[in-house]
Image 1: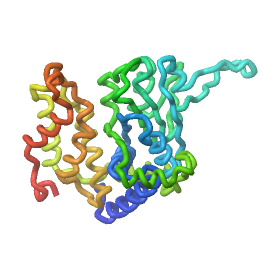
Image 2: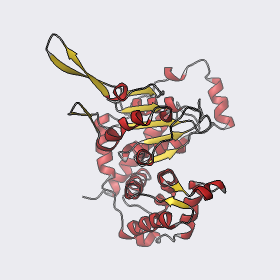
Image 3: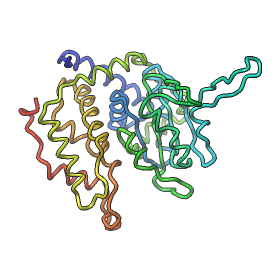
Image 4: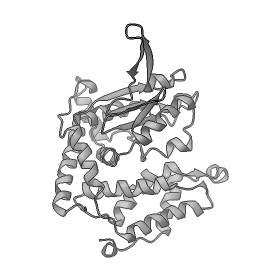
Amino acid sequence: MTMTAEQATQFADVFDRLVTGVEQVLLGKHHVIRMSFTALLSGGHLLLEDVPGTGKTSLARAIAQSVRGTSNRVQFTPDLLPGDITGVSIYDQRSGAFEFHRGPVFANIVLADEINRASPKTQAALLEVMEEGQITVDGVTHPVAAPFMVIATQNPIEQAGTYRLPEAQLDRFIMKESIGYPDHASTIRILEGAGQRAHEVIVPPVVSAATVVELAALARTVYVDATINDYVARLIDGTRTSSEVRLGVSVRGALALIRTAKTLAAANGRHYVVPDDVKELADAVLAHRLVLDPEAEFDGVTASSVIARVLIETPPPSDRQAA
C-alpha cells in the first residue's frame, strides 16, 4: 500500500497544526519544531546539542501535550544509575515476590537532560529501549508506551565532568539539531510574556497518542523511487570514502535518511520523496554519525562541512526521475 495524494494532504494538515501548537511555547523556532515532529513521526529519537536556557525542556513538554501523551524528564548526573532510568524490581514481603517499579523511561516523550554527564554504563541503559521500544530487567521484558521518543540534550560548551556519547549510541538518534537563541523579534515577545512561566503554558492537544502511531505508519507508505534510493546510497558512500572521515555513515543512518525523507515529504503534502527532501535532512540525520580523522578535525574540518561537500559532489536525480 502506498500513500495517496489525498492522504498526503491530510497528513500535512495535521503536521502543520502540531507545529503551530508547539510554536506557542517555542517562539521563532519553526524549523526545529518541524524537525522534532519529523523525528517523532519517523519513529526516531532526537539529540539536541545546545547551551542551557534555550527551551529544550519546554519543547519536550509541548510535544507531549500536543499529542496527548505523557512526558518525563531525567537529569543525568555522574551518580545516576541504570535502574534510576529503567526501573527496579523490589521484593514485596506481603506477596513474597519481586515487583517491578517502572522508571521515568516509561512515558511517550522522555527528556534525557545533559545525557553526557552520566557514566557510559548509565547511558547504555537507553540503548535497548531506543532501538527496540522495550526494557529488560531481571530477564523480564517490559514494553514502553507508543509513541515513544527520547529527546536527549548535551551542552557543547561546558565539557568538564562529561562522558562523550559512544558512536553506537549516537547512531541511535535519528537526527541531531540545535535550538539556538531566539531572534530579536521572538525575544521581545518572550519578554512581553515574562509574567507567565514556561511550564504554565498548556499546549492544546491536536491528536491522540494512538493517532500519532497511525500517522507514523502512514508516513512509512510514502513512495520512494529507485533513483532516490540510489542517490542516498551514493551519499552514504561519499561519507565512507572521504579522506577526512575515519568512520562513515552506517546502514542504520542510510535507513534513517530514507525514513525521515518519507515523513518530510508527507509533511509537505506529497506522497512521494524528491531529492530536496533528502538534501534538507542530510546534515541533521548524517553529520552526527561521522567520526572525523583527527588531523582533519585539528585543521578545522567539521562533520557538517563534510556532508555539505558530499552533497555538492553527488549529483541528485532529477525530480522527473524521482516522481
